[in-house]
Length: 316
Image (cartoon, rainbow, N blue to C red):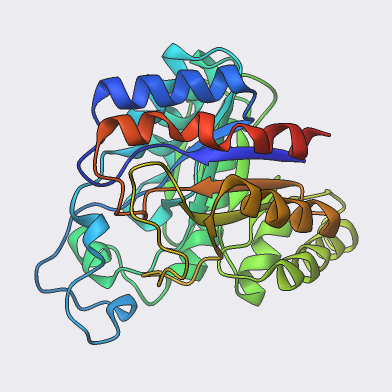
């Protein structure tokens, strides 16, 4: 089983020093991956379903550094650890330019990049990017086809309803083969079908362990029987609230978004990790960005060592 960490990306503790220390120590301790997500801005009059009519977005989103630039920096200072987006919202991007960005990071990191894509939930951000919100799924399918065309051999040409590329040469190409490693963050029936068709990894999002295992079985059945490919691995993301020295404990945290949550000591988390491993989860990602009780750079820096004992359990 692989185990990864979300990078320090949100809140007021995302200095160069914190990110460098966190990433290097995670690499040294044997963690398998480092991840970043995407939001564009913090609207002061949001109109998004995640707020459920209660006003502003979760406060943690007030400050967020850009994921691709963050991962470019991390790829330059590390040597072994995988880096990835979980997730980028495809509606905020165009496939040809994103293919260039992704393949560049993949090439310069010697094939360590994972491009995770999803539909997103923010109508405000879609409006800002002048992308229709109500045809996200259909647009995503064509986005994947265009992206893969750009990753593939030259000459490249694509003609579709949403995207068109005249016959041309695109560069760079991914470090290995005709694609970077792709992760899908889609959870509907259509989304799981899309993951089965295009992706190497599926992020289970707000699913319980049991539902995630059942859903990845569905994805892999589709991958094998419908698309003659696979298997697709399962990445199970968990928001964590660790009981750190000098940090106020939250044993029953209320999350702003419905992602599985662990709280407590590293011993508590060992038990949860063993549950995931026994269930057959391929990889777990631990995200501390929603733990707003972290109030100093040194507290962020100590997190890889605090969680380090989980590496041996995952890898054993």
